[in-house]
Length: 256
Image 1 (cartoon, one colour):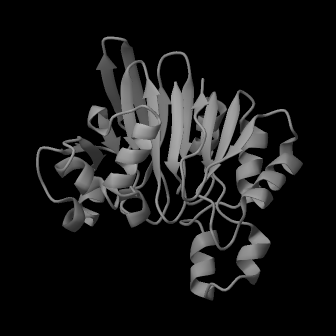
Image 2: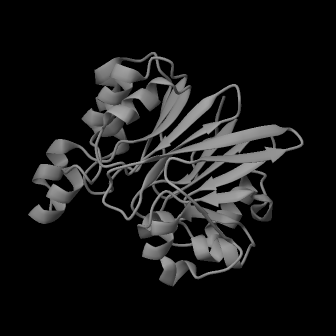
Image 3: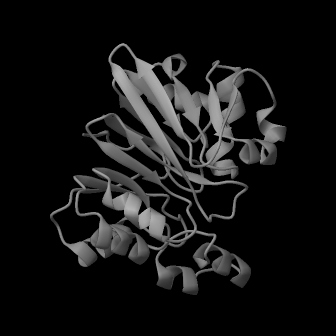
């Protein structure tokens, strides 16, 4: 399995996963042109993508899903409430495919199969979900924008071989930063984003099987790659390979 973050953060999110001949894009928060060029640089053709799978209706995750569907003919999978929330941008057509939160999506090729498990989250979206990609030998979690750490998520992390995990903000930077109080409360609240410390504790307490972790969705104003990395290392040490996804560029491929 190969996982490549094409971009991660409030300016846009898109993750490429390839396994058993199946090519998937998770979220569509970068332009179609960016997605096309960044995939090509990694040796993948955008029209060869088997599915675009959307986590929720916020623009940094769904902004170009309609373009990917209409221009490139890619099937876009999302829940019906998410589609209704972003219908003005997505439109209608054969490229739209609905699933229910909690459903398992199945994809097959001549080389094998891949399942994508979905789990509903308390994030402040219409019907947000996180994902686990399973190709039979390994399980990779794509876990961002889930509001807060909840018991089902803890159990899910314990089952994973690798994780792409939100580490959105540093608590001190957020508290002392320029955002208005209502936005600070939204970010740190139960429907917002988890902090570096919460992310690190989730891995330390439940990620014993992990072979690597990639920190994702870092805030540009309330975090830095150096602080996120240092917080994680201080929490659970140096044994786990740890990467930080880039906010405005493609990150290095991660494999299992």
